[in-house]
Image (cartoon, rainbow, N blue to C red; front, side, top):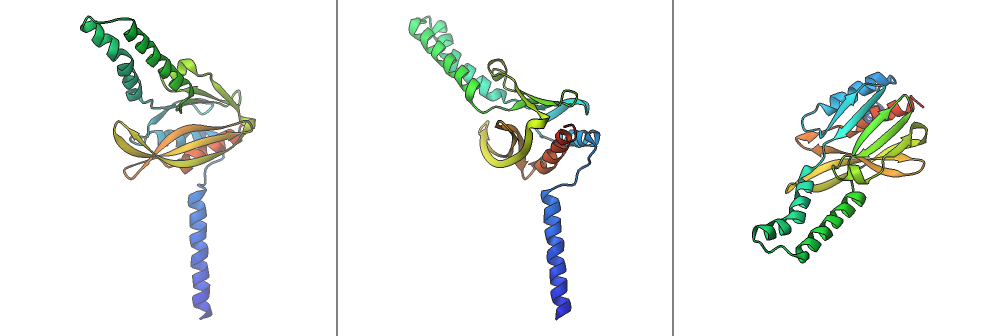
Length: 210
């Protein structure tokens, strides 16, 4: 009887340890190895991001969604172009075009964005640049010093892109001054990037250069 209870407790402990290990991946304390692990994650099919540079200074480049830009272009230029073709272009068409252009600029300045993430270990800072073609012009760069970094968090989201519902892990970065949506990692049955490994390796790089 006591042996069975002890075996049950041992099994429960092993399960708890396995769950803890899965929740907190063991990663190297060597920033170079952390960088190499991030590169491996970027090479997963349809990861939606790539990495350029080396362990001391590199960029995490998210894939921008050009479909939205094309959609805005259609909205803005459809009316005036059609009017010119039909030889009925007037001031009303021009006003409509500029109003839609203004709405687009407002959207790209304040809507959610993905980032080109520059990790500079020499200067010990992370630089975030909007990855949207228009947002890159309108949004100021965001600078997060390594010493101000506190943690990452994750939220699973569902979004529609190009008519298809997709699931992502939305990774947030926390600093002393702010909380920002950093990157969207695919989290579908046939398309998964391990967000825990991504976070653990990037966190190790930031923490070991403070």
